Length: 414
Image 1 (cartoon, rainbow, N blue to C red):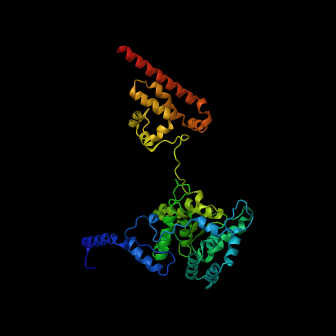
Image 2: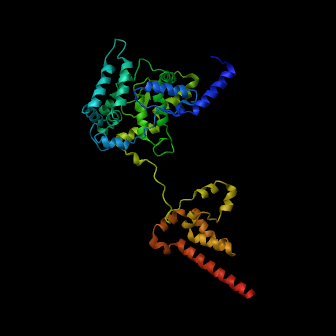
Image 3: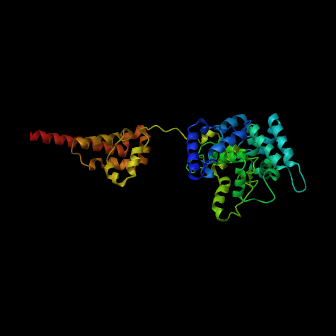
């Protein structure tokens, strides 16, 4: 209050720069910790002026680094394959919850407020319902809570099974309302609450899709995405399945009254409805897919039976001016191992007057016949009988004869 105008801005910037150098700048909160809301209040007081795009906000929560395979090992009853099973996995998950004291306790705790009518106008006490739902997903082990929320359903029993899955969070109270609000307005409402804003930022961060990834997720972690998604349940941004037979989800809102912000609103909604990372994560849990199935494979070591171009070769191919320089050149040890005969011929070319024509075949094989080379080199027993190796042998003999003639000419001159 002692400053005004530009002086206040300068002081604020100096204070923020100093804060960035302190341990407080890198602090994070734990989901469902005892003083979660107080911790989140501190976090957003630091970061609220440093964030950019809402869809790119960093999560205020500490990284968990879970794997779905860890959950599967603990919940074999839930991870059946829907293509072959004839059982209602959502019903099995509900039965498994009733057999677990913790799950049964917290499930009963949210069913009561979420199904008790308050008055003729109000079907339930939404605030109490949301609080109980948050406790259920925060306190109950994922093998049980996920089992009810992401269970797979067989084709022979789609209707009853998927409707049970959709009703897991009691949508009439927790999800629906008298009228659908605008999604951007709902987002603004969410950001006024520390927990809702934090859970939404965690969802944007952990379920960020990446089309070039096999998993469909930027962070390559299905478990983190499902944890972030389930964290939204029990807030004003509570999502649910749009239809019983679909795994497409969305909050209870639309973009009908967005005006000039229609594009921004559609982008926000599509992060739920058309999110490959979230969809693949739900499918992975329902199908019992182990996380190792989609994790990046270790790099393959180069052998004589592979023909993967080197990084340097790829860089050269990007420049038209360097392309001519790269012709007939084997510049790396990797390429030399791939094409030892061609490398020998080029070495002879440098020491003598071997013509370009004598090495042209090797260049053709390297650039245009790599696939046939893969096929040939995979059969070690028949190398000598392939046209490629016969041609290279002829080239070697030709080079040797040429060298011999040069030597005789040199001797006669002397």
